[in-house]
Length: 365
Image (tube, rainbow, N blue to C red; front, side):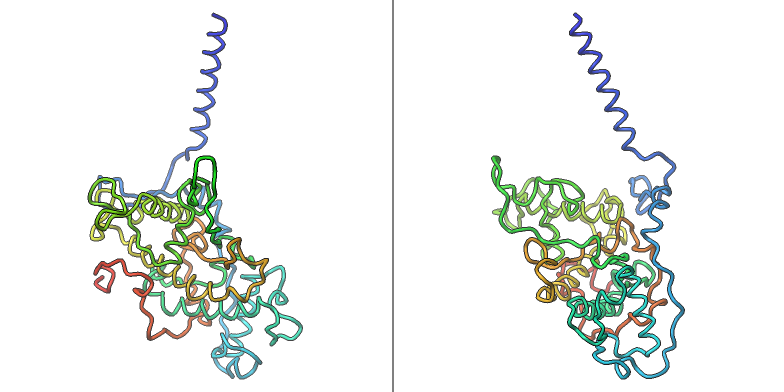
């Protein structure tokens, strides 16, 4: 009888402790709710004002220096070995260089990229920075009307990703292609929690598949469980990889599915919030950055700056958003930093980065 009493008491204490843990894991009201779809469907996005306030420093960019004059000789005429910013004025050149130091290497200063000879490209950081400036100007010139337009022409700067660090804190590397083996068989790059997958056990190669490779997202089925052998079917692992990407996006933006999806018509683009189209472009913009700008720089980096698979750090949704729907609260950088807006590429076409096959995203809106 005594043993039974102690057991009952232990179970009661355990249940009480579990209850405290559950309550501690919940967020207390009030919350701010933004409706994203028809009434009665539960389509709204929640914001906790206390969490937003705690992240204020993370999402506040350094104050911009006063705009510099566009007049005077071009930087390429005044300085030696200037390529990425050769077309702006000398005054603008000095202004944006000072801003870049604050954005990327505030502690290291100019010597992070430069030797005593400022024109020397001896340091790999100098060579990489030239291409990163070109990429920044390219993104602002070509993606401003698609994905970046979601934030009122906010555009991007070096700070969007770097946040005052030489290496963007939320960059990511591929993992070794050799699958980890355990007593339970082939783990197929899953079943180990990771920030890539919002700390779930879903496949960790989703970012490789969708933000580097041009794979479509095969998550919607019109029948029951499908296999790769059925017409137009997808394997369970491919579907799990798609869910992994969705979890990553939700984690990176600190939001739920209803930001992009209509919960009663998951597959319908016509009934989805505008956030789904914005995210569609964001996935393709990440592919553009990774494939056309980051990966080609691999040979510029020393071995100790590469990942375990010998690859450079790449961007994901987390790299820019950092758990906020609008990176840096959507501050309008295009107006603050005209030096970082290049000339549009006449051959630019966002469909080259993977076409979902829907006419809704080909200029009809």
